[in-house]
Length: 449
Image (cartoon, rainbow, N blue to C red; front, side, top):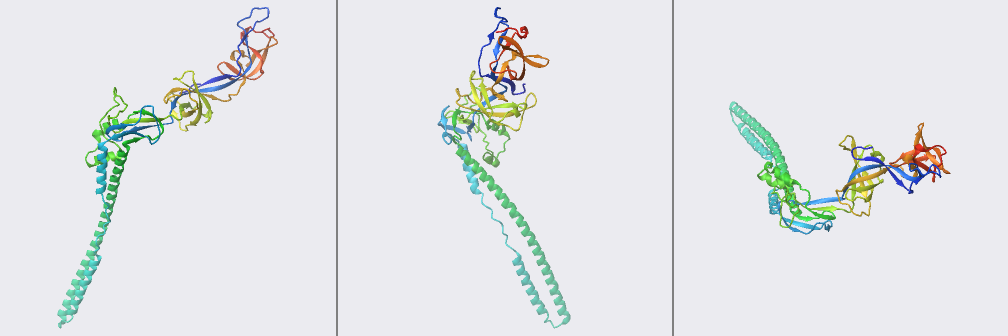
């Protein structure tokens, strides 16, 4: 059966090889080339899924220019083996150095804002209240010395009224100072929060600028084989965004926060060598070197939903590649994705990974395409006959069994079928011989050789 990505067929592996023999209807007659016999022999008959697949490397990493500059040193050549941490090259980028210097200056200018502790007016107000009340008490004592009762009482009443007004004013002043304290506390929280945000932005810009400068020294992140250049990254995107990015003070922080550095184009355009050389100007995101880890190769294909439940990790497949006709590689299923991928012709498929087992000669390269032939079911050797040996009568399977030179119609139970042979479950034994062609000429008891 055939679905979007994989197709099923039958595989027949023979454990014994024998050439068909030409028999005659009788010893005295000329051999009839239309009648032939073959041995019943054991063969491995099983269904096989053909899964279109592609060779993948274990890992790959592309080193890119972190900022606009000039490639001043390149320590590697194409095909060279490197180890993680090896020096690959150096980029000189004045713009990155300037950005680091500006970010450092900005970080120094931002100081911690200490919490505002407004001078409390409560004590001062209390002192004024006490001082005023003391003066009113003294004035009241002096008024009591007035010898005229009516005048004395009028004076005392005026003093009391003024004291009440004074105390009311002091109360209003206390309420006002409480409001001032509350507002000052709110302002304090706003300023402290703003200071924290400012420090975070400037520190992030400083860290990013420092990381960019550090990244100007290119080092291998993994073990692998060197390939100059690689897929282009955000240089093109940056050029498209150049007219849409902010300017002014925020623009000085943006590269440090986002990693976007607007620079000129360069190699990688059609007709231009994409492999960098010492002295070449580079823009941010320009691929300098790609390191490919070939220590473990795998084959990845899409397994159709009709077959995926029949496959398990550990199953072994034979892989044939377009680049190496006549060469077969052994591969073991290592993983089958749980989530599906929509298939172009309907239904879904599941990404399946096979590990290529060594030795690999010739060793394939990543990206090479081919087919993983994955047997299903029982692959143990079983009795089988050529497909042409079987015929049916009344819905049952028969063969012409040749014994002592005579044709005998033999009832059999047939099993799995391959492209050339059919498994026999019952009715025949090892060493039997059956007619495989010219069956329409055979009669019960007919002499054949």
